[in-house]
Amino acid sequence: PGNQGAGGGMIPRRLSILAAMARNRVIGKDNALPWRLSPDLKRFKALTMGHPIIMGRKTFESIGRALPGRTSIVVTHQSGYEAEGAAVVHSIATALRECYKNTDSTETFIIGGAEIFQQTQPVCDRMYITEIQADYEGDALFPEFDHAEWIETSREKHRMEEDGLEYHFVVFDRRTDLGSR
Image (cartoon, rainbow, N blue to C red; front, side, top):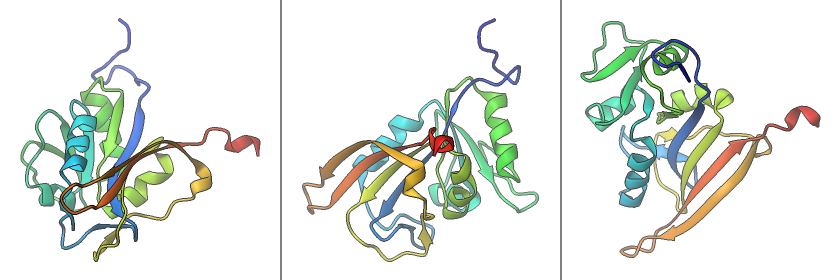
């Protein structure tokens, strides 16, 4: 009765990207975050708790474990790969099916890395981006996106007391009125 879960039917849900990126689009260096920003980690936990999270193998390995309170789904091309506490799949489509199968959650989060963001951006409904107002060296970049396809629905500006680093919590929602142009 009501909204069927456990694979019994499709529950309307939001597919969201969650990422932190520097001004120069850097999101990682040597499979790690190039900055320490605890408010961003707190936001990450608050947003994702109780929801499925989809990530690539390298992101899973950089985190080092399945995160408690969330269904972790790891996408990899490696056959036989095992990730303790997480479901391992070999395509984004399978990852999304896994989310629908195992939870009644209303939102699924794509948490990285660059290749997974690139593959899922065309089908995402929302992007939660922490924009770090500085450039960093790195080897992983957030993919370019057409700002005309997105509406910025909120922006919170913050500054770290310790070092003065400015960062913005920004939410972009996909425009739904593009067909009328």
